[in-house]
Image (cartoon, rainbow, N blue to C red; front, side, top):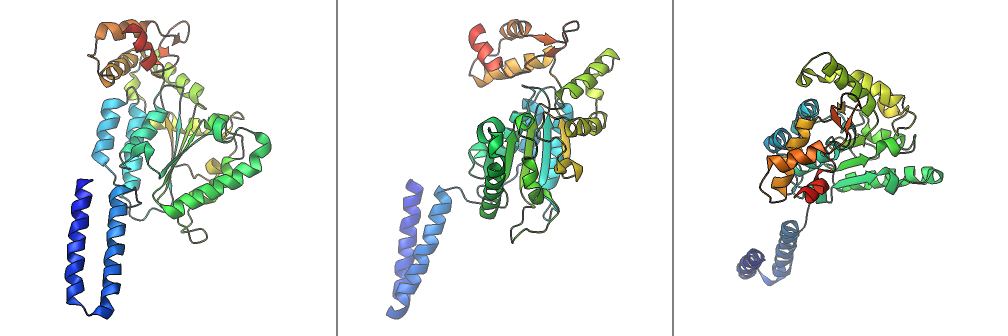
Length: 331
């Protein structure tokens, strides 16, 4: 706050010089302009605004975070880095960026959304320009479907009008009522603007467990064939993943026009995590808690988790989701 006072004193000094320099009839006008400018500067200094001070993409930061903090997701890491970097560096995108992240619980979907936000917005997920919807919390009642559609359209339009570089995250897409998400199709399409509002700089991210079975089966087939997990590429997963999500009646993306009209830029698969990945999550979690990482403690915790399939026991049933709480018990 001391800096603010110094700035204020500086502007008062400048204003007094200006007052002496102009005739009385001009004084009120000049001081008014000075106070208005000062007000804007102080507001932008103290409060988040839709400008480069608060919104600035850190490509290197995102790349490093994905590489060092996201475990076992080489496909998702590469796709997200390339997609977000390409979009943010494009001065004239033809449509908003639309990513659909799929995989079982605890594989990193929410975490990746957080990393994207942290490397675009100074306030990260706390930014007033990042908007998160949880299907079971925000759209629980099927009987209110039409009301939800209207409210969602108004919310998106209002927030993009306020800041074109807005981010919208839709969690639990597998629990969303089918048909609801289609109401935002116009905002994701290739329109230059709709009623004077351009949505081309916005980012839309869908998070879903739908498709998890398909992703797991591909990973299991690789394992049974003796192939390295890291050999898996996006083309091994994405085409059939998008089809399975489109035809999944339990998904909010069931027969959606967003897929039918090819408005989703990437279907990003999150692979089921193996024992070695759980160890990495555990060590990282201990460090985050301010504890000295202990391989023996993490190993004991990881061994007590449930793995599947029952015969092979390769993949963690809950990924890394419960590790934070589990470590509290073991430490």
